[in-house]
Length: 288
Image 1 (cartoon, helix red, strand yellow):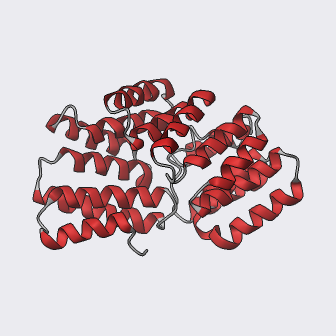
Image 2: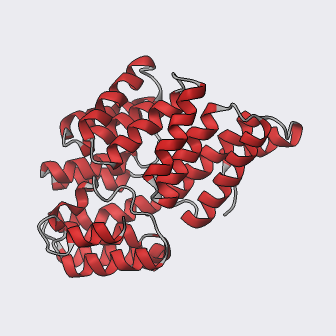
């Protein structure tokens, strides 16, 4: 994919000093974030991120942040939580207070279903730097996953007050609003989302919650027309939320066939309606 502005900045730094490990590490983090946000094909994004992290460690084998970056890739790019834990152990052995290692540890706790422990760690991280947009966004996500919906919405609104165009934040507000039963609030939030693919993921669910099947189906068709190749997991979530389990499992199989990541599925609230389906636990076991 075409480099974004942040990646371009790292590439410019590396042109000036190709042996600057923090720039390789920063580039890796940006590539990973783009991969999980749908702005890069996941396979491509995580492969590039892994190369950048590896380069950072070749230049500085004691660079804790790069090991934390490898942990993130293991979680989302490989669904290998054991490998992620080993990378984080290495990071903490080098720097026990490394912010990225702490943050990715919270991510790992969350993905393992330890929502309250993840939330406590996210609260601690955000308290250290209360105007850090990234830390606040992650705190809001942990609050959302833990079912603390009003707190999550308040945190995401703080993110927007600090960074009005922050991508995915309106989407998260929309999801929290849906789960609170506020369909109108969800629709308004999704319509304000700055990243098109997330706006289009949200709209079919908001229209469904409003009882507007025609609009919901049309919005889903719009999403598929533009982003079908990269959103099988999200489409599965839409069908799960709409109470269409057969279609949801079919799209999960499409995601599996494309080598996609299921890292967040255990804590993704959009799949809650599948929990009682006889296929749910066998599917989780089948993806490890």
